[in-house]
Length: 328
Image 1 (spheres, rainbow, N blue to C red):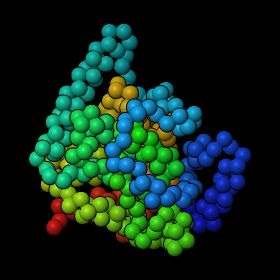
Image 2 (cartoon, rainbow, N blue to C red):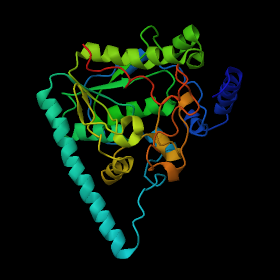
Image 3 (tube, helix red, strand yellow):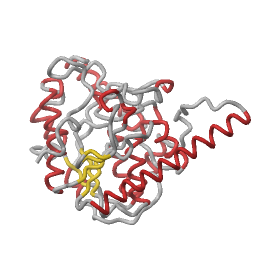
């Protein structure tokens, strides 16, 4: 979708502007084409203790730019006026609470009946729902939290992961490209635009292999993830129970995820406040107009735009959900 020289010029211009702006957090949100994240130390990410006291507070620095008070988050239902509005909101809440009962039951069953469950979080809205319920059920010691740093995430994403760790008093297990200690080493070895050179191998190095390594090291028998049917036609028939792969939000909608986050005042990704409905790598994530957020497949409509898979088809997955999680 972008040639190499244009992308590098965008990055160079962006880095110069950083010095003139309040900070890179404010800058990154203004671009649909992301700049390469600043190098982050993998050692630092893993140096925190396994158990911490939950702060139940948002990071003050992030809040300065991204208040996350839901004022910038759209709603998806035309409630009507007066009596109609009241009845529609009551039914909406009843449906949410009914689905929440099932979600809690699903996660409890996983914790009770599987020996080594993991939960992979990309910190999108649905993942924030799952994280919140896991922690409220007290299952965070039973269910291992996995976070994959691709080295091409928005800076706000890694900042939010650290914020989530502090908020809930947990420590996620961070994974990354196996042969690189940090982002700068990856850029030096493969280039900042490696995803343009060999997209399939980039996905393998930065996403698929780290996940497979995490699963192998955990010897997991249950992979909890946030896929849902309303993500698009590829997931339209998704079940909750899929062998070792558990999709507890399969029957939830994007709107219901936001209804939960809003009702229970759950922390959400900072970049939702500036128009991103879903979050991934900077080069494959664009903002989505609010009116499209809650349409079918609208959440992920800003992902992989204009990108092609190796066979020439439009890219819709990064590869993480393409391999057989039940294969021995």
